[in-house]
Amino acid sequence: MDFGLFSNQKVSANSHNISYSKKTLKKMKSIFKIFSIVTIMMLTIASCTDAQSKNTTKTKFKVLGNCEMCKKTIETSLSVKGVKTADWNVDTKIIEIVYQPDKISEEKLHDLISASGYDTDKKKGDDKAYSELPGCCQYTRK
Ligand SMILES: [Cu+2]
Image (cartoon, rainbow, N blue to C red; front, side, top):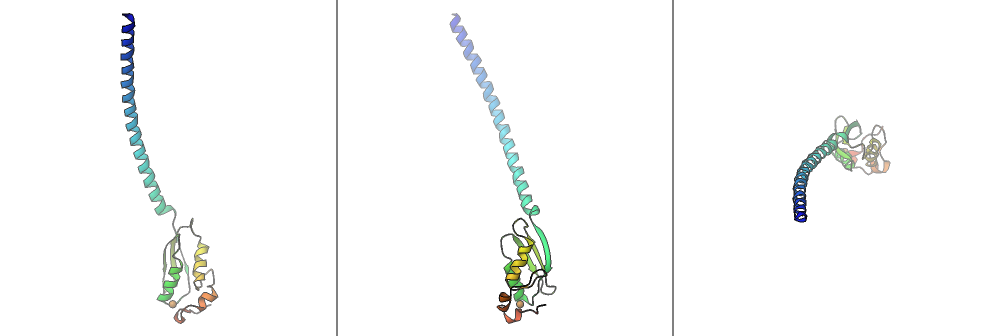
């Protein structure tokens, strides 16, 4: 029968097509999988190195003060978002700050220290905060 033969041929052609496209799909899926894994890995590595290097900068300037207690007050005034480390040297009166300039400005660093009562080389310490410092911490002002 012509009709039967025709429909048989059609079915076999179809099933061949289906198996072929399934194979291709599988191949495409695995390629896509590998690509997305590689992409995610690269993005992760890129964002990690970015966070470490790009966004921090270092500054140092003079802050007047006397003792270890001053050191604590000065450094504590800088424990805010955007400041990574702050280290004031009692002998040299120099503070070294590592901060993120996109989160906090250098001016703001001076403001924070000033607000705690200490003079920086750019900003005079707040008078009220200075008067409230312990006696030993009331450094000689210029
Ligand atoms: Cu002190």
